[in-house]
Length: 119
Ligand SMILES: [Zn+2]
Image 1 (spheres, helix red, strand yellow):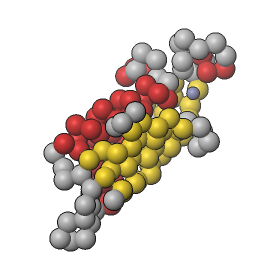
Image 2 (cartoon, rainbow, N blue to C red):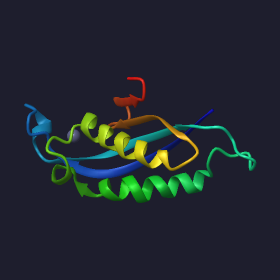
Image 3 (cartoon, rainbow, N blue to C red):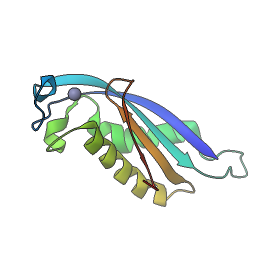
């Protein structure tokens, strides 16, 4: 069974290796979805949505929201940010009774980078 939670965060970046509008500093409202796979426990839940929400906000979004992403990432493309989120969430999930299934990140809401364990 899969559990998916959606988040948004605002951040600024520029792409140093890109030739076009995105090489200039600009901002996005990013759309992030984190999906985990698990089996409901005796309480009927894989994880409390509120608990999972806090976890992602405290471990992931606090590093990204209202930040200059070029400080953390040499080349803050959606791909590089999604990979960082995936790697961090994978470690976090190891100490929880569910597994990371998928991270999806979008700068626009219409174009998404999706990372799954088997890809
Ligand atoms: Zn951009």
